[in-house]
Amino acid sequence: MTDILHDFRSDTVTRPDAGMREAIAKAQVGDDVFGDDPTVNRLERHVAGMLGKEAALYVPSGTMSNLLALVSHCGRGDAFIAGAEAHCYKYEAGGAAVLGSLQPQPLPHLADGRMDLKLIEATISGGDDPHFAETKVIALENTIGGRALPMRYMDEVAAIARRHKIGLHLDGARLFNAATALGVSAKTLTAQFDTVSMCLSKGLGAPVGSVLSGSGELIGKARRMRKMLGGGMRQAGVLAAAGLYALEHNVERLTHDHRRARTLAEGLARHQQLRVTMPDTNIIFVDADAAVGDGLRAYLDKQGVAITGRYGQQRWVTHLDVGDADVAAALEHVDAYFAGAERAAKPLRNAS
Ligand SMILES: *Cc1c(COP(=O)(O)O)cnc(C)c1O
Image (cartoon, rainbow, N blue to C red; front, side):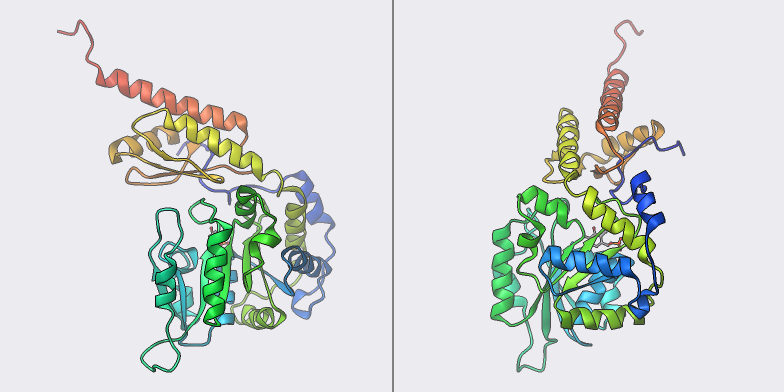
């Protein structure tokens, strides 16, 4: 495989820069399982304050964060509603069912990533009828598939959750991308949610970690479950320091990722064979006939341009380690691929 020169696979591929490494080197640490790590404590207080929640918990991954949220809202045998494409349903190895003994109630998405409100309400089960698992929480994801769900939709789902006295969880792995796209603060975006999970290791560029925030009661439960899952970390301040640094330095710059994604999308869309969904944030989905899409991907791979996808589908992601020059280089390679493909398709005029 060719060395990767321009990496559009995911915003998880970023590496800590010099400033972040310095923050890591200088971090004060202690044993976090004893509650002694000042840097972890500072990160948790910082995120709780930023989102207007009582408490927060630093965890190794977004997957663990979502699982902890779900098991904190639910007991064994309870149910949770999530989108059929939601990370906490589809991409977490079935953890909620296997480790939480929870029953997922996945719902289809509308084209823009929302779920139908009437369907959400009709799916909530439990109460007096012993046939049903009891729905205890609705999980939304924002952004989902790179799309920012509007405030109004989140408010409507929150009203349903309150009406039925069940919890509302936000998988905000890319919470700041959503807030940036919607032009609201993270606090405003998350105000209606009982628990919020956010990733430090995606667009924010920290090497490791997510933070779950919510009420003192729910976070207390999550803290116990984190220990049970083996997620109690000791001198984790070296990692939390990177998270604090990321929150301080890498939130406002997300607009650049979004701008570059749009430039990239517009450049890709110049080719008719590529059906490009214009991005709200930093993730672009492209659909093409399998031969075209996979041919292009293999060609780009040889040029050191890495993307993900298969069967003609492609995903391009911009992030901290992708600059304007990377976008320009990638588009040049795409143009070259289609120019070459056209030449190959055209018979030579004087061929006999
Ligand atoms: C990446 C991601 C997660 C999980 O994060 P990991 O740290 O990879 O476990 C959860 N939800 C969404 C929407 C994500 O994109």
